[in-house]
Length: 159
Image: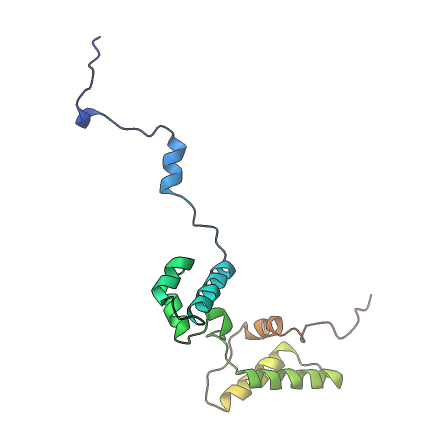
């Protein structure tokens, strides 16, 4: 058996020295940077732009490692997504506060409403301004969102 020596570069097969190195470079996980860390970088960049004025938006974005477009939007006054209400939130803040006060008032009179009653109250508030009704999971999300409300059994179990 004769072994042929390959000297031409096009006939050589280049395997990586370490197969795990190749795997890590192609399928590396996303960086482990929390959104709060990104938000703190954006706040620092905004603070470096505003007081002195000697740092441009693009320069601050490069210096703090944040996206230029995000920084530009924040300079123009657009709040961050975590600071604004969710798109799926049906009731306004005042309507929700009114609903919570009514629920707590009923509870203090020993007539706590059931979830279906809370849903009816919310739908009445929405019908006053010709809006669509709440969804099937709205009541449970509302109770989770409001710390002053919680579900509990009114009657004791009869063992």
